[in-house]
Length: 80
Image 1 (cartoon, rainbow, N blue to C red):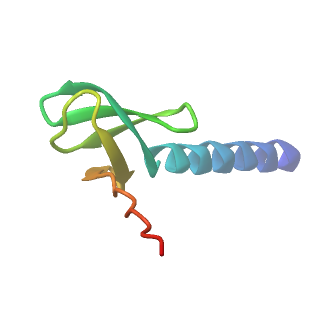
Image 2: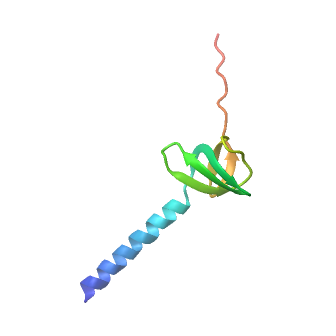
Image 3: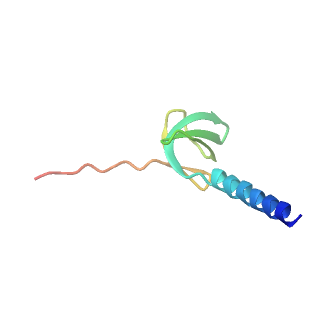
């Protein structure tokens, strides 16, 4: 009986930990769809993240803690 309980506890811990990771997806990508303030972003690694914010389809954005931030542009490097 105790082996079953331990197995159940381990399975539940795995499910909870993977759910927390999927909800806390921080990534950079392109906006795929917009529905009001809900935005779906296709990340660089191929996953999709849902976030809140104002963006247009095709915008490059960063998703941090479920919020949309504009992607940072790289500064040009000036030579000699």
